Image (cartoon, rainbow over all chains, first blue to last red; front, side):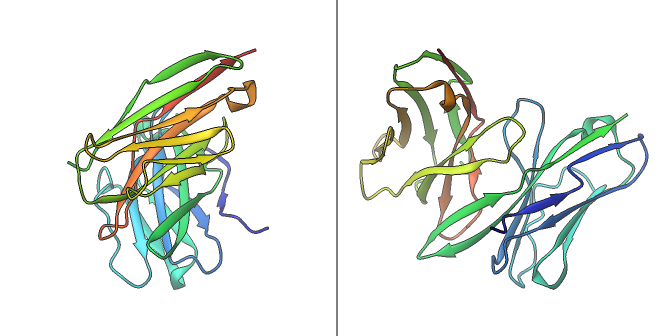
Length: 115
Length: 112
């Protein structure tokens, strides 16, 4: 079955470089989320897309972080001028709200290491 | 007010024992409370969820207990097994906001 996929699965980059992380949500899911999970830590909300509405960017930690969702499907999270503290697992989730209940389906994540 | 506080941060239980993880919230607008299970190297996956119109929901060995007046809910894992070793996240959502608010996570280890 087609779950949420993310690419790359691992990314090693040098401090100061830009990186792009990709998320392919489940087909038909209208909502898409990005989270960051540092080693052994909880889920830090980054950004949320819902249909054609303006995204909720309230969790983005700095202006080096941005995301877009093209055609209501694939999303790209971009981190500019990466810093070592950006090293984490970046998780994407998509969801479909049915009768007021929403289940988020997570991808396997992209493990980012900034050297 | 949007926070969900989860405890303990880590928990070790013997095989066959009962694992209990607790969460508390402040926002009375929350109306949906899911629990997610995450294995190492994987994304979290929905385990079980409850709405505040019931005080308990059971699915197999997993039970959510919900105390609306205390604004607390907990996950109980009966007859805990080594395969239950994972990180568990509670979460809460209000109908208007849609965004799930996650607890900090509990790393559960079941010793054989």
